[in-house]
Length: 109
Image (cartoon, rainbow, N blue to C red; front, side, top):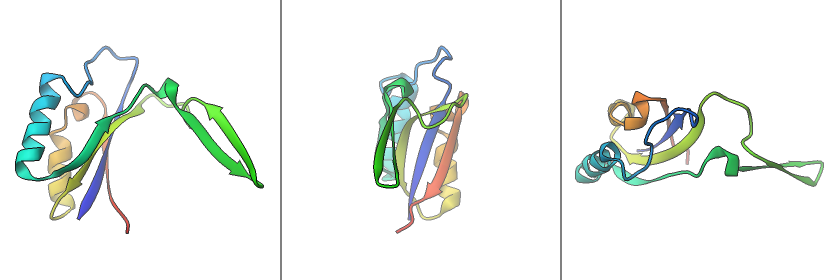
């Protein structure tokens, strides 16, 4: 089963969330070696986001993230795991969980 692990971070906190940090390099290696990692990427800063809504047929575009929040979506991983417990184990090892939060959801097909 596939799970999306969304990494939420406080973009104002001084931390290295880049995929080239030693912690993320090691985490990516472990996920790949275990055959769990099916995808993932770091996202641009939330200030680069554009929110799209369509209301009564009218397209509305708003600069910035959807809502004000202390933590912003900073990236994600796509896992292939046997069950939720395995996905949660991998999410708990994500460096982003040490500074922010990792939300895990199964993909609904």
